[in-house]
Length: 386
Ligand SMILES: *Cc1c(COP(=O)(O)O)cnc(C)c1O
Image 1 (cartoon, rainbow, N blue to C red):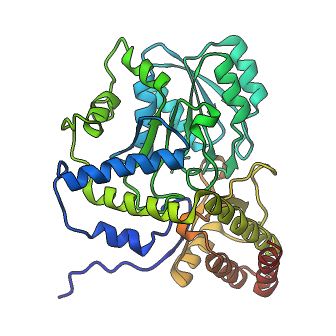
Image 2: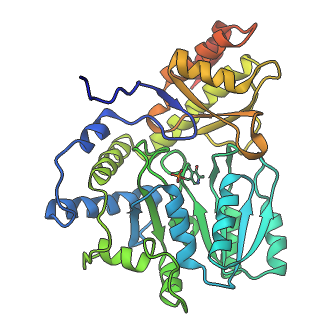
Image 3: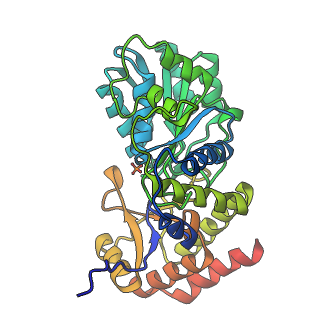
């Protein structure tokens, strides 16, 4: 009997995970060693160093939390928030909502600035809110994966600085796909996930805390409500003490190490340019098929293209045909976009011309009365002029 798992080879064009380079998969199959083995300690140190590079920071406290992106969100918020703290969350999609839920669970006093789905948070509305509340912390999502919005951060970072407020940024989808410069912007805490533009399997959540954020944690009146996500204990484990806290996922750290090396070999600028080029070719090809983007013009994420589903098709049926007949996964809409949108990811390894062409070809064949050739020609012309 064949006991091997049979896993199909998919093109992962959803909101994550993205396709993983064979070198990363191979790294995960290396021998198991102990989590205090000197060889593993070196990998931990190197992972921290490489993460500082991609986050654009010198922050000493930069490491991968042993869990997915949401754990990074929870770690960041629950270490910085204490009961009754005023907290300002910017909400224009699923992940702002998730942050708000965590603020409630930490006992913080939740204040929000909102924008409709598919639009950015207007810095002016944050400025207005800051006339009424003096929050300890402002949190905002950089690339809102539920809507396809890329949030400009400069003005909001200036507001946070002027009001002496900590700034927390969700970089789960943006990191390694578009510039994230924590130190340049003055971001105090950020978290990410490995399975989006880093093209590593899901399972680790890189986080980074500035000295100001670390001081805030040191000066807490109350214990961090989560034992597992207590950054004080986690930093002792990742620091010189190597004080046992939990067992770091060994193979996932091999994978992270390899994927960060692949990112560095390509170079961050080249990687950002690759994401913008292919997303432009995709969007213009889709437009030829009558599929238009729904996120606010001028503020669209390169790594996730959100589009309206044409009126004459059933969105779930098309996704199922793509998966079963073409091995292509794309995402459906969430929340306000449920049933109305597709979310097409071009993250990390997935972000390649052949995948753009495969999806345009498949959609041209599936959708009624559409021409694959025209869509591909349009995408090709983007490639030819860039
Ligand atoms: C994917 C994502 C998360 C959550 O990460 P998980 O790895 O699914 O826990 C948080 N924020 C954003 C913007 C995301 O895209």
